[in-house]
Image (tube, rainbow, N blue to C red; front, side, top):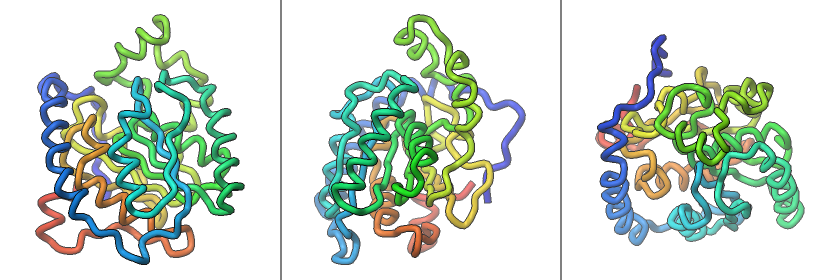
Length: 260
């Protein structure tokens, strides 16, 4: 069941923001033994292409751990190829070309994994070409409140020459909260110090749209062991056999995937 959304959806506390770096480093350290010990199952990969999109102001190096892990699973993983993410709506045209290229190269639908703002673009890309997309996985992506208060708004204002997010194409902003008609997994954390976790989840879950809560920081989502586990589980499914993610036991659920 989804979290009930209150009227006041304020930005994360300064305490959560101030501890983002330290928590992310801890998560990176915890991911090392997880990644080293994780043994991909033989049936887990069909080698289909996976396109990884970085977050706002991030670039290819930021998703290195994530991409290497997905590659270890046996998939053909690709960086988005557009350098640093400066939040330009025009990226969608280039990403559409990349998506079409990967589909033609492998003759298989492409999975999209987007971190933060990268997930926002992934959702829009899937709406443009749903027949080319296998599934969408977003990590702390504020697709439901990009114009609302967050601790990243000031940075966007700087790189965009003083423009506010609300000055982006209104049709683009209005369409964000609606998911594409493809399997979609929205991963979020209530300890997010950058964007409000309430904006990073579907308002309504369906048989192909699921929200999954993990414990961790925003800037650590790309190497959080719980997130990597979910991604490994999700990538083995397609539109024909997709099913909801379920932790294997109650202990794991309470420790790593709390509900609500």
